[in-house]
Each structure stands twice: as structure tokens, then as C-alpha cells.
Length: 201
Image (cartoon, rainbow, N blue to C red; front, side, top):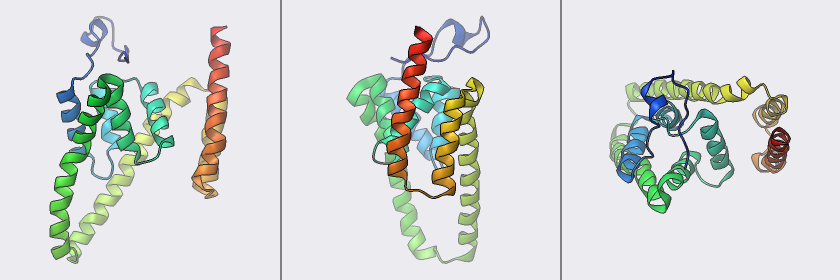
């Protein structure tokens, strides 16, 4: 079970009593709130709720879990809900988190699809959707920057070099993702293992 981070000042409530692990109802409601707030993507709100608001994970733990979800098949945020729920409440936790994440948006998107089929060609609606797209890109850039902070604070040259290399080959050179992951993931695991082994020696 994951202990929440302890970065609060001495004497504060979070320093005295760690946040308890979420129950099934809390998992469902929390992920439902994330999904309803997550216009353009849920990652921003998932990190805010899990790390900043409820303190169920540290920033490093969230990054490590999300990195695992990136490597697994399927949508990353769906993988995150399944892994996060299972980590606290097993299979039932995965189901609760997944139901909260997917249930409300499915109902809303179904209703919007019906409306869009009738009114989607209206210019004002198209301009509104363009504005929402720009806001979604800004939110994604913001959460990406926050997720990078633990790596930057540790100043690990190998991790920073690997991150920069993956960005260059995928983002700039447009290499396909699977072969890059087949090289980068084993290399990152090996470097992390050797580094932790050296630190505990």
C-alpha cells in the first residue's frame, strides 16, 4: 500500500495523520469528478486529485505509475484508473475507478453526439470547439511540465539524457513509438536498478 507524501510543515494535519487509502465509493466519485472536469484530457485533473488534493501518491510514484500505463496497451488514463484502483482495493477497486472514469463521459458524449449530428455545422459551435482544443493543449503542456519537475530536481544526468533522447527521436524525428520503447524502457529499467543497487550498497 502506498503511503502519501509527507511534505507538509511539522505539526500540520497531513504530517500527523497520513491520508487513508480510498474506499470503493471514494474511488468511483473521485474518478467521476476527474472525468467530468477533464475537458481535453483527464491526466491534468487525475494528477491534481491524486497527488495534490488527496495525496494518495507522491509525484514520483505518480510518474512511475503513469510510465507503466504508457507502456501497456490501451488508453493511458484508463490504464491508470485500473492500476490505481487495484493498488488500493484490488479488482473491485479497478472496477470502481474505471466505472467512475468512463461512466459519466459515456452518457454525456452520447447526448452530445446526438446534438452534434443536428447542429455541428453551425460556425459558432465550430469556433467554440477550436477554442476548447487550444485550452486542452495548454492544460496538457502544463501537466507535462509538472510531471518533469521530480526528474529535474533530482538532476540525474542519465534520466535527463534519456528523456531528451526519446523526445528528439519521437517528437522531432518522428520515429515509430514501439521500437523506441523497446530500446528506451529496458535501458531505463537497467539504469534505475543499477543506480538503486549502488545507493543501497
